[in-house]
Image 1 (cartoon, rainbow, N blue to C red):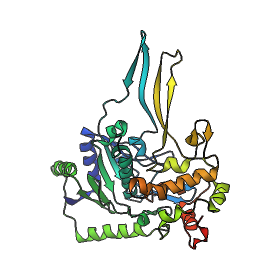
Image 2: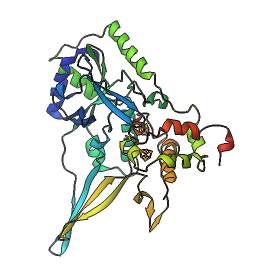
Image 3: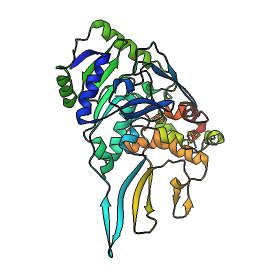
Image 4: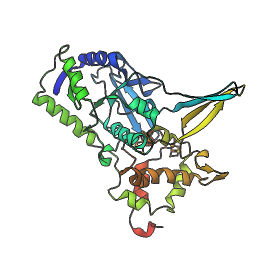
Length: 371
Ligand code: SF4
Ligand code: SF4
């Protein structure tokens, strides 16, 4: 189903979804964009847009703008809603001479996510591969992923740090959605991509006018996508994975280490990173404890600590681990690179390290750079 709707009628979609789901959408919070629970159209960032550059993120407000979805990305995508930054896995209690283990999974209302972009949808698919399609299925991730209803949005603009066009993941949303919105100046084009999406549109058709899409609207849609495809940054037009695996002793790793703070921001904002640690938190009287999973990063000291030995102590090793895993060895694990071109690691790096620039240097020919 493929229609246009008036912008104000998006409220009917929110109302309909909120009956059966917890609706989560992009909301301006702490001078960035955060996926938060929403029930009203007025919570969406009408009039806001973002400016992003290496080490810089700034929101701008224009009271004359009719656009709800002009901010490309915030510091986080939807990863924190599915793979929680901190997740209680189980608890254990001493009970009259025996011990009792309790699962921490509780019933959740299904999630509906509004406003997901092509880069973040691609990252969601990578997280699905990691948490659901290996030998071990993660029940905590699965709990939120099952019955997830996705309302995706096509980008009509890119910021300076976007490079999804060169990873092949955007800016146009092509699959993995229930409903897809394309925002035009006056209307939305709305289309279904699943049976669940089709049913929601069918229900909406009795509440709001679903209009035929005009040739002028089609043209405006295409112009927006073309504009968003013109991106300042891109991945090197070379076989990055093969080249990187031969650059393990390249001098550029030392050069990067002089700037990199090993803060781990790049991994925390990355929508596809999945590293985590687990630990136990005992009660004060030691009658029980809770087992917790928490996001971790290949930049932390503990990440490479095994049996009393740090096998990656230096910053150059941390950054090399991150970059080579994401852009080279990920191919062996998941059949593609771990980067979807969202640009967050560039914007949120406090010293503005730009992954596309570093790759350009590391993957340069000639082969004198090969180890
Ligand atoms: S590596 Fe950087 S640009 Fe690529 S998906 Fe992660 S945060 Fe986005
Ligand atoms: S590359 Fe930037 S964001 Fe990543 S650890 Fe280094 S300083 Fe932090």
